[in-house]
Image 1 (tube, rainbow, N blue to C red):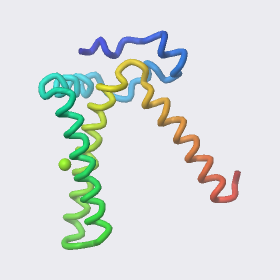
Image 2: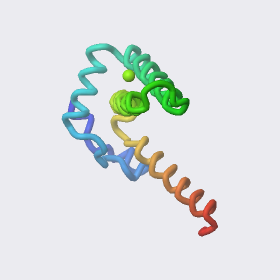
Image 3: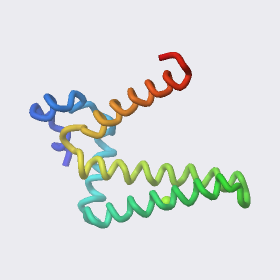
Length: 122
Ligand SMILES: [Mg+2]
């Protein structure tokens, strides 16, 4: 399973962040095992469910219903759940080219520019 970390020359040309590690070997191994054990479709479904749970926790936090500390704790727990599922989705959909990292850095640059523009510093 760790051979998925192999450097891919083809992807490197299109995606300059190919080979850049954003997850530890252990994390990748755990995600790979989960995908193999429960199957891709099940883990995609689980990702959708965890995203929905995060949405629900954020809505509850924003509405400030009930215990504030409890709502905050729920948001933190659901962020962790979603990050774990997104790790599995990265292993499933993007194990060679690190395309997610490339897209993320591109979008972060765009966000940075939007912030400069909004603040009139551009
Ligand atoms: Mg959850």
